[in-house]
Image (cartoon, rainbow, N blue to C red; front, side):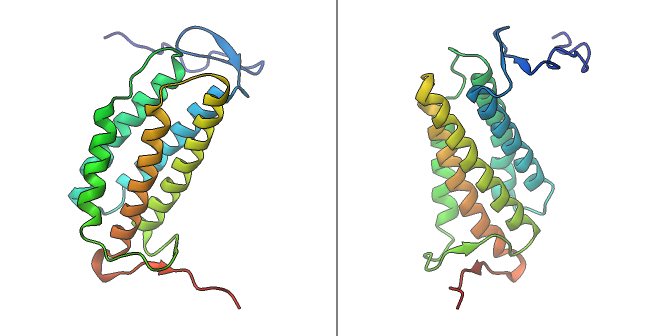
Length: 181
């Protein structure tokens, strides 16, 4: 495989447009570009999680998630192509089921925090929700595969469950919301 990027500074975006993988140029404010950026940011947040101390039961699926998110971003950058597979959702559902088995029922809202790994997971969860909203906004004007927003929805659920598991690492606990007086 040859080099995909021969140089990084192209100056082609200096006037407010960016190129899609199809070769089409669109404004940087285009809903598709917004969704692509949110998915890229989500992948960065997953990378931030991966530099934390994580159990293998979370680390291995998250490493796979980074590749799936790259596929998802690729699909967004190539209108008409479908790269996200049903098996991605099935994997997340399976991982969710496994992690949920270890958790007590949720009785209160959970605040972001607990420890660095749980806090990183909360950040990823919030960005996943934003990415999902961006994808739905795009879908309102340009039909995209229904697997794309479904994947992001499932992933945000998975990341929330990761928050709960990670907060309990090393004898820690979740930070429960308490109504302000």
